[in-house]
Length: 221
Ligand SMILES: *[C@@H]1O[C@H](CO)[C@@H](O)[C@H](O)[C@H]1NC(C)=O
Ligand SMILES: *[C@@H]1O[C@H](CO)[C@@H](O)[C@H](O)[C@H]1NC(C)=O
Image 1 (cartoon, rainbow, N blue to C red):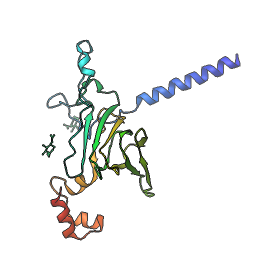
Image 2: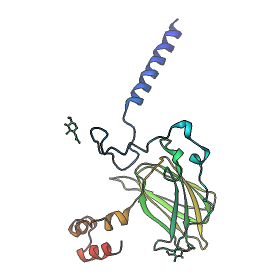
Image 3: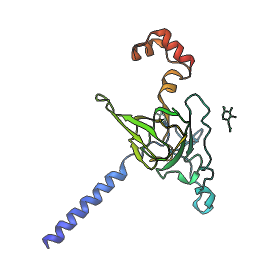
Image 4: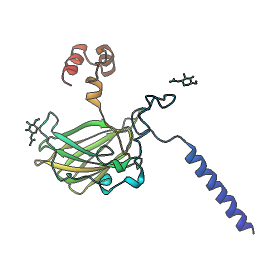
């Protein structure tokens, strides 16, 4: 009898815990979602609107073309091909997505960036990548590794990370991300290339840079 009671108490507590868990707000699936009253001008929801499930087809869950290399002829020498809810509508609300990343030989760089909504798990399909991420304040510890073909590395949600091709051939990686829309903030572009530009006095002080250097950097993004 005592065993049964213990079981019931445990079961009730678990049921309560899951009630509390499901009572919390869902994580945002985009940068923000400003509230409006009523349906006038209310177009967006958290994530995307759902199709009537009866009308769903295989193509809603399908993407083709990830065998194609991204064009790395650009300033950083890398190209990300995303496969998220914008490419596969069936990913809506499912907390998962994918990307292919191509790196040019000798220094192709996926520059320091963060995914505000997703942890990333990356597998090197080809080549040698120097990768790393930096932990949050105050430690800002740099966690780094050189990866070869077949190696897997994790970049925890929100942390600044990069991959750099240190091999003589092109490199290819595939990344899984724990969001239908993980988002990307490329640090240099966001800081020095915002539209409109951030007042150079702010960046000069924050980065301990001469204001002329800040202005120069702002012309580069
Ligand atoms: C929504 O309605 C509430 C209550 O009437 C009001 O206080 C608020 O200002 C409204 N918000 C917007 C964005 O219209
Ligand atoms: C790759 O991008 C460069 C720069 O935009 C462009 O000149 C070139 O034609 C592209 N190559 C291919 C194969 O699309």
